[in-house]
Image (cartoon, rainbow, N blue to C red; front, side, top):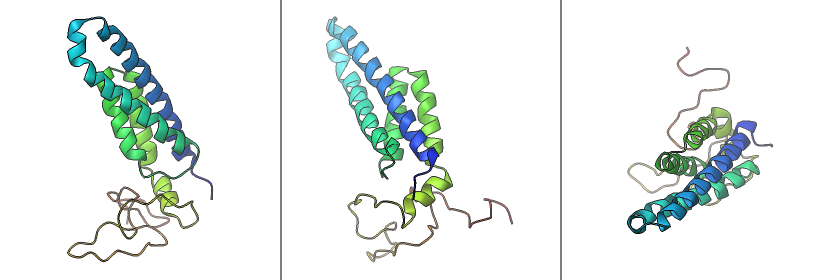
Length: 163
């Protein structure tokens, strides 16, 4: 089963935004290295540089069509780095990447038994942690919620809010 184009497009947007964040951070770090005050605030820009590199790595994985649990997290990190760097194009691309990663088709593909296996999350079971117990919930054939566990999916043929 092929990944949805929205999923791959989100990865491409993350790579572009991450590259802009890395270039902006390196430029700011070079400028700050020339001043004494810059040595005090340079660690902030090192964090934005690391966030941009992280975003490029996750975006490359997503753009290649491999399922990733870190897609939305990397996109949020990239958005924070874009805001910190004043990178308006990066902000726009990150918001579009988050919108694409939140689409129901992407969530269904990530939860599909035909899709490549997701890397382990460190928890036992496939579902969210059980309330009041530690029994892992079974993996549904069609997910009831999105892969981020916060957005309910509508049954096939029904839109959210329609009767």
